Amino acid sequence: DPEALKVLFEEDDSGVVSVDEHGIITALKQGTANITITVGDNKKYALNSTTVTVSVSLNDASVSGEDMALNVGETGAIKYSTNPKGLNVSFAEDNSGVVSVDEHGIVTALKQGKANITITVGDNKKYALNSTTVTVSVSLNDASVSGEDMALNVGETGAIKYSAVPKSLDVSFEEDDSGVVSVDKHGIVTALKQGSANITITVGDNKKYALNSTIICVNVHGLPSKIIIEND
Image (cartoon, rainbow, N blue to C red; front, side):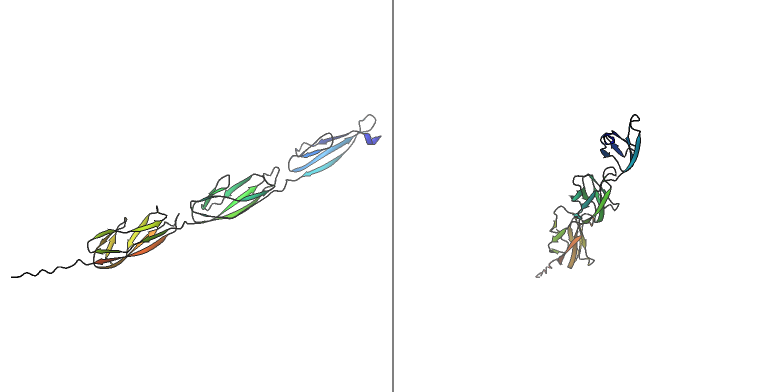
């Protein structure tokens, strides 16, 4: 019965597929392959064959991610998902210098601005490459400073009482151009002449912390005069 004839299967040498004795094909890589199907034994039945073509495509893969907001110096993990689940991804930041990202998707905010991070899934072997981009917005950290007004007599010195938030931040001091006082980098005020002057206290560097400032008033009084009456 010709229906009972043994059939042989043989793939070409492209490496795209393999085929077993039962005609079960395994797709190995993207591409096109030919499989030759042969029947007959050249004894009772003449040999005959046909060729089938197998086209192998990569599996689809996709990835999505969420935009992020960080302050300078902070770190955060990118939230993303892949389809199929569990696929490995890679991360690459743009060349803005605003952020860096490691192989695990941990983002470090380096400076104020916006940056794009590309998340890529697939390997072009089993799964097709696909990617998405998330935007990271990096802001400066808030900083504030407050100070107390002062009163001095001409020739006296005094230290400005102030507080910064965060406490560890450096501050700078600058007197106005009235000539009433001078102030050094440590906040020590010297009263030069009678009158009122403003001193600006500034915190922040516009790199990690936003600039902020406050103004205090220094009132300088003249030295009290003494009248001496001598009796003859």
